[in-house]
Length: 255
Image (cartoon, rainbow, N blue to C red; front, side, top):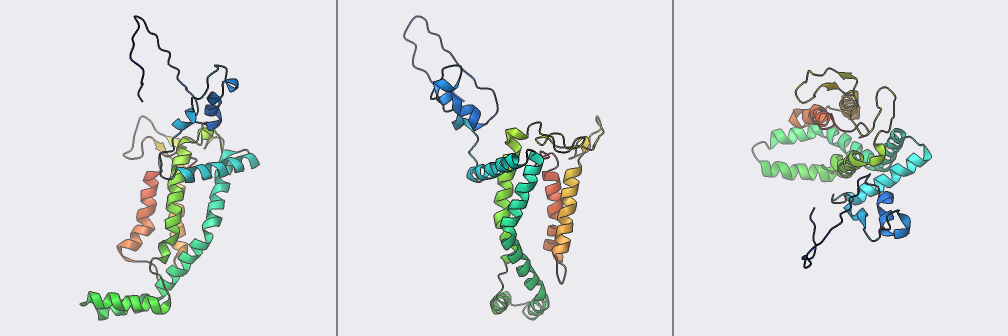
């Protein structure tokens, strides 16, 4: 923040500085653009320009915020609104998720043939890649098809992360009494302060535990045929849930 003012040429000069202290809500900020809409007679301040829109996914945040507000008008509970928004996102992404599962299933069905090619051309990587490509082409499989939903889900997750971290209406919004009493803050089921655990702090939070467990369960039930093995499979099965567990441990419970 900086101030810019003309050089003082008189013997005395006085400046008046006004500060807005309040929620980052557009409806609260735009009233200072028209003198008749506020009690100070101020106009053309355009405080809405101070809203955080620097994110490259700011446009997506605005869309999700509009949808979240619409669901809240339908059922005036922010927790329910977040759940409905999540269901809507899942429905929109369902065709891509289905395509991903079909691609993964086909890839797993080809495992025996792929292992045979690896054994046959283990000393000739160029020929192996060529034969693998021919196999994919013959079976009409895109080896990257299983990653397709992530290309759409990851930007949405980032936008939701930004939105739910700073959405003012979630401040003090209760969802489940006695557990999730403020969607803008992390929930807690046990607090053992002043004792503090590394990476976890003084609280045991149930939502991140449920989230990590549900991710592992989801990976397991989505596996068909031969289970994934190797470092990549183990990372997807256990590494990703553990990583997200720590990423979201102190995140707002709404997120």
